[in-house]
Length: 449
Ligand SMILES: *Cc1c(COP(=O)(O)O)cnc(C)c1O
Image (cartoon, rainbow, N blue to C red; front, side, top):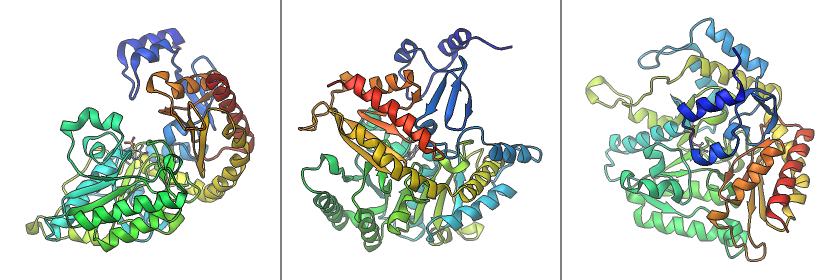
């Protein structure tokens, strides 16, 4: 039985509450109902095709409906779909753990699985907190994180996040912590170097003052994602690492968005040879197929939890679908594709290609800045290019531009007034050309002269 678009939409009205979506607006807007995907395109139940301009919210690296990943899942399905990792292991979870340890920065050596970016962050929080307790350093109980950061939507992850729109709504529910500024060169009244130094100075002072109490520092390395695709000045991250080591603060890298080649290196930490103590991974981990996430920890952290039953050092944390076989099998097939198709090299090449193509967007009268690292691209719209005056919230300029882009055949979402462009990493020159043409037209038409 094939249902019509209208029948499906009626079910949406009656039964489904979409995340991060104002449902009233959503139904005014002729919602898209996806039926299938093919490569970098999404196809809806009406047969319309859309470029997947944000890789289904930053997930998909190799394109939709990839034969290799489909087959790996089917193969695993013929054996078992899921068994628990609580007190037992499974084959794909073991093979994937080994692969992850081999490709990530050296310092992280043990893999703890969960099922989303947010849970990977929760695991990191509890691990870091208990690590210091196990070491007899009870005073280290506070987390330091970045203003404007995004680490997921569970309560712990929101507590170390800093996006006011999400944060302030839940203020009484959250635990308190320390925040420092994340460098935002476009909005800093000075040079790139001055921006970096000012932010580092703030961090130095905070650590001098409170380092004794700080268990860990959360950071989205190189690019602050949901905060507006904001890129760190070179050298900033390396100095953050040095300061963390100096003050005995665990460096917790949230690479849920940046990991797996998005920024032009396998991991964003690789840009500056940075070694986190804890690394959070999700999103592209399973090739954008299934919910498996991972928190990697150093041996030093793992060892602090290692002991006899009587010592009560066990890490009491887990989720039902931890280390799910189907997800791990998909992740292994995805990592094979990274190798076979030199995915990261391809990202570097396509990133260079977008540089020229994006020029025509950068010169539009209401584009303040086009930012890019690898294939992580943000286009910041402004009311006034000279003064950098932002659009007001009521103008909903980002929403309007994305609505027009969708009519023209490209799906993406705005972050306030920043248009996000994170295509599947497999994109070709031809795809990029067509996608950037659509974005250009949408921005030009909607923002006007
Ligand atoms: C998306 C994201 C998360 C949350 O991941 P979910 O799978 O949506 O819970 C956490 N951190 C960063 C940096 C992200 O971009």
